[in-house]
Amino acid sequence: MSANDTEKPFAFVLMPFHEAFNDVYQVGIKETAVNAGFICERVDEQIYQESMLERIYRQIDAADVIIADMSGKNPNVFYEVGYAHAKGKLVILLTSDSADIPFDLKHHRHIVYKNSTVTLRKQLASDLGWALSEIESLRNSRIKVVMQEPFAMLEKESWRAVGEIDFKFDLSNQSSQVSPDIEAVYVYTSSGWESTQDGKECSSGNSDWQPFKQRHFLTCPVRRLTKKGWAQIKFSMKRTLATTVAGEELKDSYQLKGKLGLRIVTSSGNFDHEFALNVDVDEIPF
Image 1 (tube, rainbow, N blue to C red):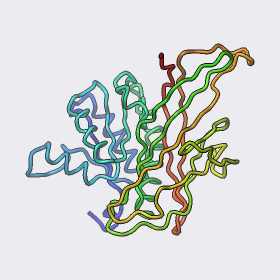
Image 2 (image 1 turned 30 degrees about the vertical axis):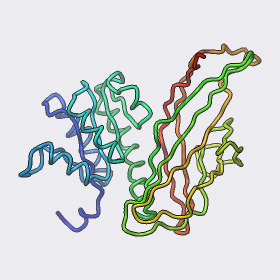
Image 3 (image 1 turned 45 degrees about the vertical axis):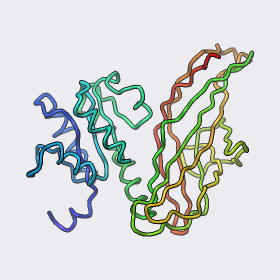
Image 4 (image 1 turned 90 degrees about the vertical axis):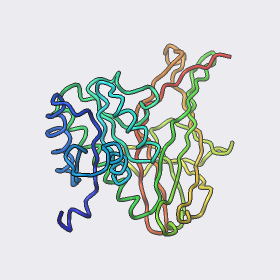
């Protein structure tokens, strides 16, 4: 391995070891990852002395990003993905069929490629660009950001349906140094959202980060993260989803898809984090 290779981020791939997946791995995943600047490997390409499961755990621990093909609901892959999530790893999920992504993982970044390596390469290249940005931010800021599964609720009035989503973002410093001072935190959304934190309305204005339309000012509970430190940012977002005034039908459930941005402004610069949003907003019967 060259000196340049040691600086490249490492993508570790979890998927079934079956010849039916050879093209998906070699052409769809590995070539795309290498072209994006990653070292990309699957455990069956490596030489090791420990058991395969121990090796997989060690490679998940060492990886900068995990790429996991969930096609066919392979139980080993599901178990390994659970371990990667528990470790707070960046994970990109793939599947040929959207039904193979469990409901409680649908808010995580995932690609449905429908047996098309062309589709897989195009979408994976985009997601690996996101991963590179996240990896660079982590290396420079020493602040890792993980979005917990959002909690959504639908409120229906006589003339409108309003969706409210509660968000939690975990901030952690896994390095041996104190993080830069955190000077401000902003969340970026599409238009029409209202934000609250600790029961108080957040200031909002026009976005300076495209394609987002709004930015909302959040309060961070800490000034900086000590080594191995942790903090959590909690806030709620509310938006009108439909109105009878506009001639729209008020439904009992809505699906919200899109992107959410989180910018951490520090003494060392701005660090942007982008998250895929895929949330079912349902009315809760009482």
